[in-house]
Length: 138
Image (tube, rainbow, N blue to C red; front, side, top):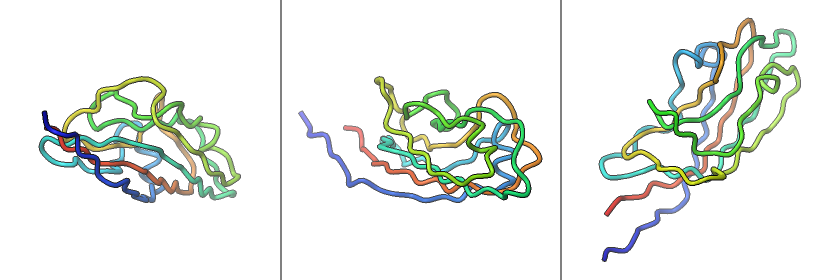
C-alpha cells in the first residue's frame, strides 16, 4: 500500500475586478488552475475581503460561492450573502472547509461565482485568499 503524500499548505491571493464581479454569474472567475494529472486541490479555507466604492454600491447579484471548475461541488461551508458584496462598508469574510464529505474532482481548478443573478451598477473589488494543498493520487 502506498502512503498518501500531503504537500504543504499553499496560499494564493487573487483580486477580482469590478468587471469580473459583474460577469461572474455567467462566467465564473478562475482562482486556482487545475493542479495536473492525478492530482486534486483540497481547499482548507477561503477569505474574501470586500473593497467597495462607497459612491457606487453593487445592486442585484446572489450568494457568492466557490466551486470546482465546471462542477457544482462546493469545497467550503456557507456562502457570502449578496448583501455583503452590495455593502458600502469594507469587510473580511472567512469561509471554512466544507462541513460534509465531498469528492474533489481530479485535475480541476477552483472558481468564484454567484448563484442567482449578476451583480449590477457597482464598483469595487474583492481580494480572495485561498489556503489549499495539492494532493497526488496513488
